[in-house]
Length: 84
Image 1 (cartoon, helix red, strand yellow):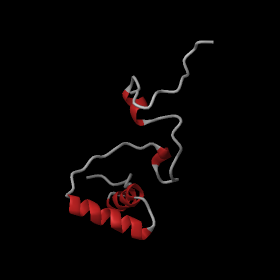
Image 2 (cartoon, one colour; image 1 turned 60 degrees about the horizontal axis):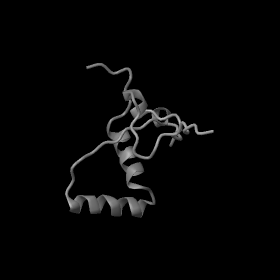
Image 3 (cartoon, helix red, strand yellow; image 1 turned 120 degrees about the horizontal axis):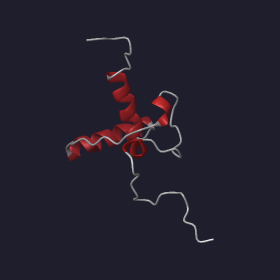
């Protein structure tokens, strides 16, 4: 009757690194997203560039995150057979 729910709290961290990146209850975004698992990427940009990125995404009717995911996927394709 007094059992705690299995769902983690908003700011709770999982105990293992794999659980940190892969959350079982996270929905897949798109078919090309490697199973829907994502990780946060932090970059430094000037406020002016950030504004231009946000305006470009708004004009295209997409979110900044989706626009940047598509850009990174185009620039860094999954070349499994390529060796250097």
